[in-house]
Image (cartoon, rainbow, N blue to C red; front, side):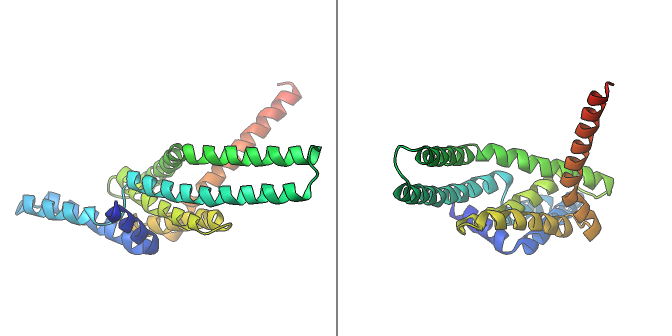
Length: 226
């Protein structure tokens, strides 16, 4: 577990270097497979090196979950402190006091749901980006297994969950840095140009706008009688 955590933090602190190393390992593996001399020795050496660089998708999920739990703990403490503070200034058995209790209970409930279902959200969100990378990798005719490369990029980018240890602004920083790390992974690991990597990151926005457009057109057609 210590080795996984060290690799996770190394990927977080040195994202570009890690992505470049993963790309070098992949190129090295390709050369090993095409070579007929000392193939078994080369493969063993290649496997040993690749195990020391970065984290897998599953390892990234586990360590990220630890940071989410840590974030939830001090968020829970903040909620209890906030509820206690409001209760000290409010009159008991009033609508305001009941509203404060309801808000506090709802916040705790959704916080627990966030922690419990984090692996599921992580998996869906990660697979979304992997499939998106696969599509654009095919469009831009990049060599290599797009799914494997996509998993490498996404797994290292999700080490941004480390920023959840920072109170209040940690979640916002994590989301921003996650996109930055995805951009860097596309550039360093998959050799996308700046324009290509930017297009991949903007694609979800285009999808949302297109969905809104379709919904608007559908509602307009229904209201007009079509």
